[in-house]
Image (cartoon, rainbow, N blue to C red; front, top):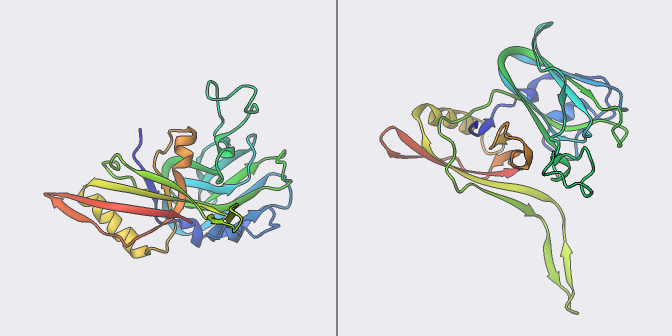
Length: 271
C-alpha cells in the first residue's frame, strides 16, 4: 500500500485555462471558495485545458467538489507543447460500490461512494512526467443536473514520506451546528455546514523528508491550500473520506528527537 500523499504546490492555480463552455468561469477552479465552481452550459463533452507557467513535473490531477454522475468518464492528457506525453485513457469518475458491500434492494445499481459523503472527489494518479500543460476531457451526457460542474482542480507533484504517519490518526467531521434549548424545553439547532479536521503525526521523518516539509509548508504558509490523500489508490470510502483540500490549523513545527530522525504533528482543517 502507498504512503500518504500531499500536493503542497498546486500548479493549476497559476495556469492559463480554457474550457469548452463556461456558464460559470473555469477560473473559479483556481479559487478555494465553495460558492465558486466552474459550470458548463450543458451536458455536452467538456474539455478543460491548462497551460502552465513553465515545465512542471506532475503525478496527479484531481477533480474536487464535482457533480459528475456514476456513469461519467474522464480522460487526462499531459502535454508538452502540442504533444501528448501521457494519456490515462478513459477513466471512471466514480468509486462504484460493488458487491458484497452493495446492499441489494437498498443501494441502487451504480451507486458510488462519492454519493455517500458531502464532498465528491476523484484523484487521478498518473505516471510522473514533465509537462507544460494538461487537458481534462469530461463526458457525462446523462448528468441529472443538466450541466457539468467542478469546484476545484488540483495538479502537481505529490510528496510522500518514506515512513508513513503513526497509528492514531484522527479524522473529525466538524458540524457547524449549535444546539439551543428554548424556554419551553424544546431543542433547536442553529447553523449548518460541515468540514473535516485531521490530525496526524509523522514520527519517523528522514532528513530529506523533513527538509521538504519545512521548505514547502513554511514557504506557502498556513493560508495555502494543500491536497491530502491518506490512503491513495486503496479505493472505497476509506480513501475518499480521507482525501480532501485543507489548510494547516497550526504553525508548522518539528522535533529532532534522536539521531537522524525528526517528528512533526500536522493538524489540518478542510477548506
